[in-house]
Image 1: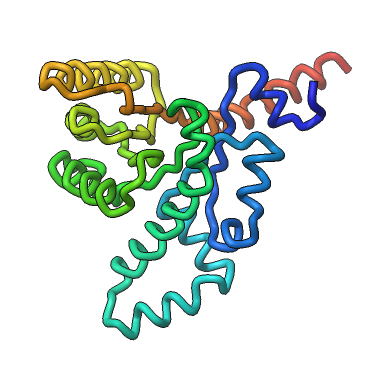
Image 2: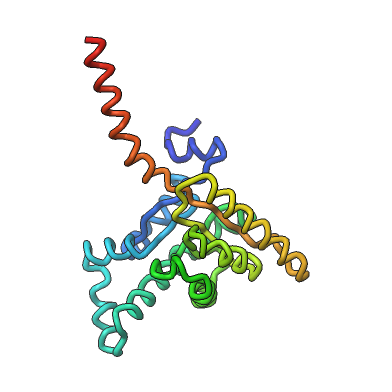
Length: 228
């Protein structure tokens, strides 16, 4: 068994994704190394990740200045930068995507979080992002809100890969799974292929951990004090 813990997880059927993206990670060859040497299977991004990447480095300064001189506003500059990075990352993962038959090698890009309760707006933006990035191994992140459920179904029907985010409970998880199934069924009814349509449901365990960890620490502390 390899010593690399990420590769060990792969041997148990787990696909590890990196929840981070930054331009120098791509240009330095580090992402390529992580895919080849560490067994990294995918990558995800969101506005908060890009905000951190832009604010904590100077790698985007030249692009921001050049795009600003073209008259682009902040939203347009963000979309230009984020889409360029996601395209580059998807290119690095493309060989893995091909060799895995579409089972691995995805990069996620999120719709505007302000659309979390706007079904129509979510569908329109997801379609636009899918067309703009134009790569089969990307996923569009859609929030698992009540308004997001019909959007998920429609996007799957459209043949757009979806990464459902903001999932915090099993009831909504089941609804998301049902929306995916209904989207696949509707696509089949239209006579469209479904073998290239992929989706993941991103359950936010880290948010649950933040709630539970202090409770466990308090409980363990009480048990320890009692045993002493």
